[in-house]
Amino acid sequence: MTTIRTYILRASVVGLMLFLFGCASYNDRITPYYKNISAGNYTEAQKELDKNSLIQKPRNKLLFLMEKGRVSHLLGDYENSNRYFNEADQLLEIGLTGTLDATVGVLVNPMTQRYKGEDFEKFMIHYYKALNYLYLHQTDEAVVEARRISLQTQEQNDKFNNKDKRYAQDAFSLTLQGMIYESNNDINNAFISYRNAVEIYQKSPDKTYYGTQMPLGLQKDVIRTAYLNGFTSEAVQFENAFGIKYKPEKAPEGGELIFFWENGLAPVKTQEDLFFTLTRGDGGNLFFTNAGGGLLIPFIYSGDRDKFNISAVESLRASFPKYIAQPSSYSSAVIKGVQGDINLEKTEDINVLAFRTLQQRTLNEMSKVLSRLAVKKVAEFALRESAKRDNQKNNSLLEGLGYGIQLYSLLSEKADTRNWQSLPANISYARIPLKTGENEITIALKNAQGAEETKTIKVNGNGRIQFYNYSTLR
Image 1 (spheres, rainbow, N blue to C red):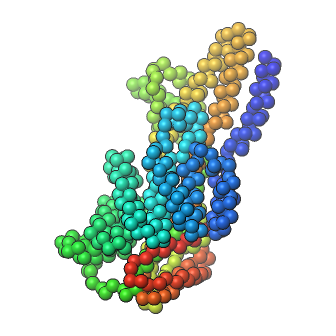
Image 2 (image 1 turned 180 degrees about the vertical axis):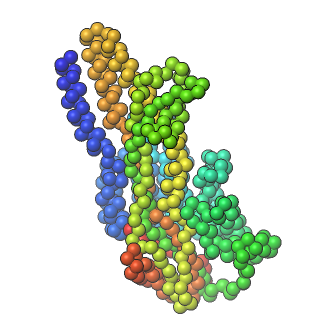
Image 3 (image 1 turned 90 degrees about the horizontal axis):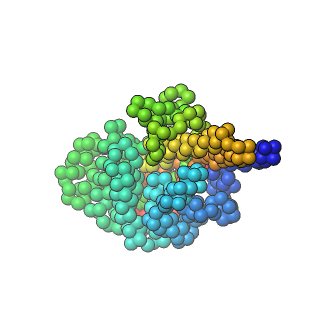
């Protein structure tokens, strides 16, 4: 008896130390990489990524590939960037869910499962792949990537059975799709993509979509391409809806630059601990309630609920992921040109997407986590009850096993705090007319203190649509 209790005491001390270490979030454990990304030290960031043991684990392979693709893109290594993104795409197509993976998640915690990616992260893979192909002058491949946005949209719609309140489409990705088609002189498909993006905004009661208002540029593009296709009635409908009268303009001799400004860094996940009790309701149904009684979470259990020992589950501490927004150094930006200032319009707000999509699935995730913990609690209780009834030898053994399960539950309980952290907080864009030959374009950035900083780039106007993305990831 004494030996077993001594062992349990020692194991508890060691376990407490492991528990405190285990409380570190994913962000905490990749901090050197994240800091270098924020500081613009992309070469050092890549080195930190390559030597980080956590992100190298098989369960984090998708994360590793997405981060490698992103940092390679930031370094201008577009070919290798797409090599990583294509491998990430293949993982997603094959599927990252399996019986063993699901079992590990039930027995331990979601952090031990393979990372499957947030829904908006999958769309962002297409964004960077398309830009990479365009920068490599592989237009056909960029068009293929544009088409894959439609496939991703369909897959997302099928996933949620077209529920209006779920993130089932991405207006920015469809806008990008239209731009790529237009750059390839496919005006018909460009119009269809712009129209599909517009309809997403129009379906929303407040005409916004996950933190973004419908950009004026998108409104003009759908009207312009409707007229170019000869779809006069649809063009007039959009003019009336937007209060815009289309005025044909001569195309710029040097073409256009579609400029994307990627500002800030995506929010990071941390762990939040909440306490619940298990209650039997009407009809024998079991549900969890928090201390304040504001939450009622259904209990997921395949066995006989009437025989479930509810007294074994007095209270549960459950860990859930929670996003924390990262402050951005820059609040706004405009393009300075000879024809006047051109405003950048926000087209994707990853901050809002992250918070809302997590909120949309919170109830389901809470139910899974609490049900898993309740089953562990019942197993622990059963061993202790057996210890009271059995002989002295078995009593000590069962008591030790009971404490072991309790310690295991404490150590293994952990929220999944992983996410693609080098994504920007939001993306804004503008279409900039170009003259033939060299164009000097100045981006005027306003920082958090109100001071203005400028960045100048040079673009050679060749009569076509070109793309450029500029990142201020801090």
